[in-house]
Image 1: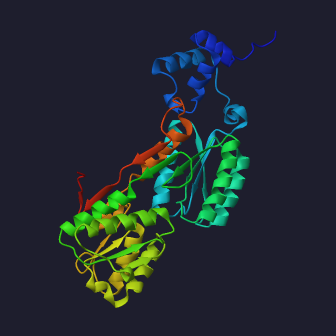
Image 2: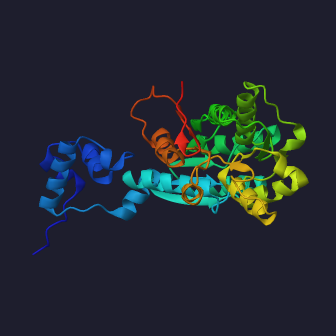
Image 3: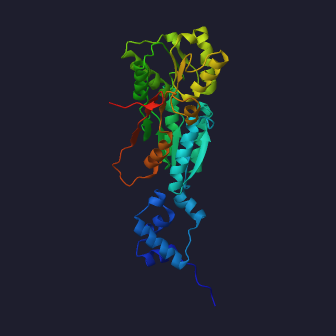
Length: 346
């Protein structure tokens, strides 16, 4: 006697009273993962699958339509707190959708960035989330755009995290306004003499944060000399080295405003070596909100950037396409925190 044939997806659909594509989305998740279809519909299809003994073939599903059930995520430096938090957010959002994440790091090298994008094309991911930080270098951005266009033409959806001149769906945060509010609040607390530590202005994020901070101070008729704005990398070592650039003038300032928490950590470490404590001798502020800084420095002033939320927002733009008229841009809001308290917006 011939053994019974194994149940098929068509059998499940017939028993559940739905179409085969609907049954497939309910069991395989579609791009919405566990959110595909109504709860009642998913339950009906899952009950039919259990009754028939049907199970999904992961290998077949992974390459359905010739495209991997995965997204690629490109970051600058995997050891950076901001990148690590974005990775966590993307992975959490992808897991809900039954999608895997392939993380690639450029090591902040523009040539490596282009090489990785060429390699990613051959991996046939459903989407690419690029969170490397865009620049004002027209040559670099044109070269990047060409790679991204090729990916898009071959079926990979592209989403950019951060402000960019490139015409792709994007997720941004109001760096300029948050920096302005931070500076405004610090000035209102009585601070008058400021130095600023930031990444080079070729980086759009750096440019926007410094511009917003200066604007906030300007509303209180406070200016910052060009020699008191030091440009280094958005890193612990960048903040450490920036203090030496200020030389023996560090004790003259009320606030040394680092435009990233990582820079703030380096600045605080170097000041301590020089015999100065923050905030006792000079207040060091940050941007991004590394949680542990608030633990060891109660009253630390920074800006809380919703880094984890970038993951859900980016994958929503990349994969949740049920509404063709939906916006291709999501703007998130950062929250300045001054001396441990959130700043209310007007």
